[in-house]
Each structure stands twice: as C-alpha cells, then as structure tokens.
Picture (tube, rainbow, N blue to C red):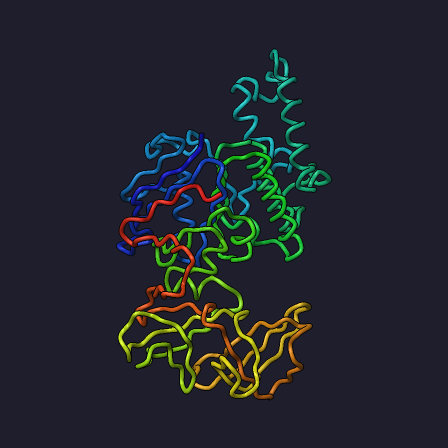
Length: 399
C-alpha cells in the first residue's frame, strides 16, 4: 500500500512562499503529474515527499504512515532527477547496481575481496547483475553497461538515471522532469516506456513536468500548480475541456486558448462587437464576461455568416500534416487569434487574406473578469474539481 496524502504543506525560502497550504491525496497505484511553469513549487513539493527537503508546516503520509521524521531511504521511494545524479567514476552497470547492493548485501559482503568469499554473496551478486541487465534491456541501454557516464550522450545518461530507480522496484516513483534532456523522438519513446512500466509494476508514480504533452499522455490525474498553490486536480481531458479558472485555461492547451472580452446583452446572450452568442449566464445585463475559445472550436464562415464571432487578416499559415493553424490579427484582439482546422476540409487560405470565424455556443468557456469560471445554464458537464487555495479539495481515485 503506497497511497500518499499531503496535508497543508507550506514552505518558504527567505520569507518568499514557495508552497502555500498544499493538500492532495494520491491513490495507491495512481499516476499523478504535477504540472506547472518553472518556479511554481512542483519540484519542491516532490523533494518534500522524498524527504530531501523539510516542509515548514504540514504532514506527508505514505502508505498510511506519517514520514515527516523519516530519512529518504526509509520512505520506500525512488527518485529520478533532472540532473542525472550519476557517479562519474562508476560504469553504467555499477551505477544501476549500487542501490541493490546497498539493500541486499551486508557491509561485509560489499567489501572488494573478502566479501566475495562469504557465503551467499555470489548468488546475490548474480541476481543483482540479472536485474540490472533486464532493466537495461527494457531501456535499450544494455550495450552501454560497461561505459562510464562521461562516455554517454545526454539521453543515455537520462535513461541510466531512470533505470537506477526502476531496478529498485520501489513502492513510489518520484520523477522530476526525467525526459527534459532527451530529443523529441526519444522523448516519445521514453513516455511509452514509463507508461508501460507503471502498468507493469502497478505502483504509485508522482511525475513533475512543465510539458503538457507528458502530463496529458502519461497521467491518470493532473494537478495544476501555479504560484505555489494547487489550482485544479482532475483527469487530463477534464483539465483541458473544463478548466476551473482562467489561469488554468490559459496554461493548458497548445496553441493557447483565445480570450475575448464581451458583455451580457439586454435581451440575454453574450454580445461581442456586433455579434451575439446565445449563452444564458444568469448575470445582469451589461455585466462584463470573458469568452475562452479553444483553437479547434473555430469554424471558418462567409462574412456575416451564422455564428460569426471574429474576423481578421491572416498573419501566418502553419501546415502540420492533418492540422492547419491560422494565425489571425483579429479586430479588437490585442494578441493573435489561432484557429486549428482540418487540413483536408479547410478552405485554401493564404497569408494576408481576410477570414471570418464562427464558434458554437456550447464550445465556449465563460469566465468572470476576475478569472473565476462562470457555469452557464447550457453547460451540462460535471463541474471540475476546484482546489481551494486554502484547503485543497479531496478527489477520489480517478482511474
């Protein structure tokens, strides 16, 4: 049993808050990703779970046991660092075998000459070597077991670091941006390897990244962190399709969501310039609102066509195989609007042309000017798990 419970963890550095009363429950066997920009506190939170840093307040419970007073090696966790943390004087095989030797061999058995003569040492060493070989084979680094870290590429060193954690078979894996130094092709391969490892072992994974693709493809649940606070916790699709607040909506998604300022009309609906969307908000006429529109929600229409919302001149056309991205300088928008269209069905558009975009009302996300989500009468989706900034919402198992 390796469920993790974090209760109101706080951490300051020199009077600057890094974590602000973070509470989160991670289920046994779950793959949870801490997602956020640099400096949001996600790596600090991971290091507190591992026992490498101490929190100023709050409690960490792993497998039903409060571990605040325990050393890292007593917590049953393995951590993969972004900076590899390999011993440069040891071979790859020795680096991967070291945690197994420290755990399975006695101090006497670890002695260079005398240890080999003790009863049972050779059998244990052979089993350690076999475990290292199997792990190295799974990571496709079996051919570099005899090399030292300085003789490897950055991607190979990262896989050795992952392998050193894998070989221990811990109850909890903690990973701090382990794929950040890999090239694009290898990163995709390693994502699949990590996901397969999780499924095979069935243990708890806590993964830190700023890469949305990693979070969306790997996770059972994603915890979005901004400014040292948990803003939302939920399944990847839920976070994307049903963000709890404007900041989460703007952080999640590539290309970025378009935000359009609008007002509630006298006769109901949302008025944007000379256009109207049939969205009932329950707010007073004249109230300001902000529309959030994902790139794929836009549809090109003729000028004055039904549902037209924005018009603008095409600044850039990006052809990405099955998708076509149009960057528009839209009227009334300070930043370019990006529309994602089906490349096979999209009309031929060139830079410099004028284009008109429509959107269906049910695909619009609505926010108050202060940033909080506005739930509309037409919104039939269940509400997202909104994490209070003081006491985090508790979520059930999301798998």
